[in-house]
Length: 393
Image (cartoon, rainbow, N blue to C red; front, top):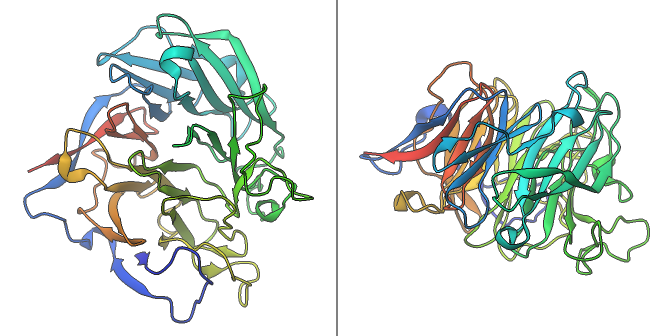
């Protein structure tokens, strides 16, 4: 069951008397239009565990597909290129549990400076944020241009790395890190002011190398706090996104035992919010199981049961040109059950839009969503298939 929770974004938990304004169960969600439905249009296939897609800003002719094993492939004018845009297979170790390249982000001024950034787990299983530069053709990145921006040591048993980097509307680079917990363990790093784990970080990569901490980050100058921290209290923000039209923030935070959640911050988005992990999972007390202190926490606007689902995959708000009726619609899915759901936000309350959609193949896993330069939204499958979300009559 999916629960859509209304009310203000920041409020105490209030487990007794939560205002549940809209509820939807499975495919019973009413479609927005009786003559329109969502569809998945095949884009490409045959990738080796595809995990992300992204388009350089302002360049509708190129789409990058990231493979977990380390290759980043280029589709140019709708044709996959024979050689990888960037091959990082030598920098990540398949024998480590959470190996791989997770995401790529292009500098807002990429067309002029050719700067791009990659988040990956290195040969020791530690998190690395690195910068590269594309060559003059923009068809390849230069491996030798790699510069380490930020490193985060991970426990050898950690399974929660986060996974997304993205430039925000303000031109700053954001990185979401998981809390680093090993399997079946719960750490309090998400609430640790001296740790970067379980946080979304905000970095200025246009100042002194490798980065500077923006002066308006919420914890700058506070004793005992890392200045890079922008938001805290997250378990594993694998995929999250800014709405490119208005800057609103959607965070899909993967649950532990019982609940998957999506958090939402309206514009203007400010830092310093606490999303509550591990005190709460979804809107429910976790540590302790009852009587948790919840004053001032940001609660999710969407939660759904962890079983048979297993891991929420956050998407994007559609801002493309092909389907005007889709504009303003936020998409998300689940890795295990494979559903794709859509909502729109009205005064902080997400309202279901279209009938939920399942992938064309059974037993396929939604790893990620992606967005190209035109704002079209893509669905990335672990099977190596990539689809584009469409609207059909």
